[in-house]
Length: 83
Image (cartoon, rainbow, N blue to C red; front, side):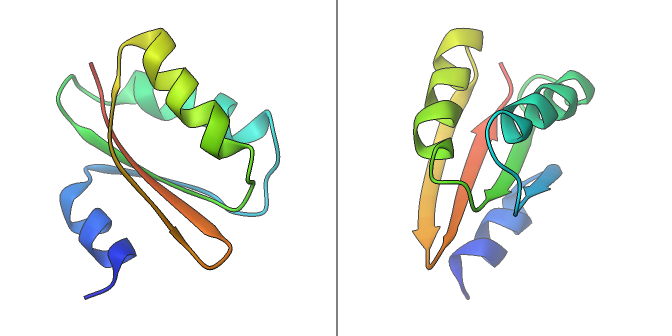
């Protein structure tokens, strides 16, 4: 089973920000996190390399956990846990 399917099985929410560039993925992630309940997992799929910097900083600043990340080809996958 590939990395994306493993992440999808564990996530309660999913944000596909493929094709979007900074700051859109993080702005959209704020909206998804507002809807999530503490402890729920959010899968973020992105193609913007700046998410490698932005997503960890987002988590650190707001207290969420970046549980796992993976890069497959030109896609970046992040599994976050809402604080």
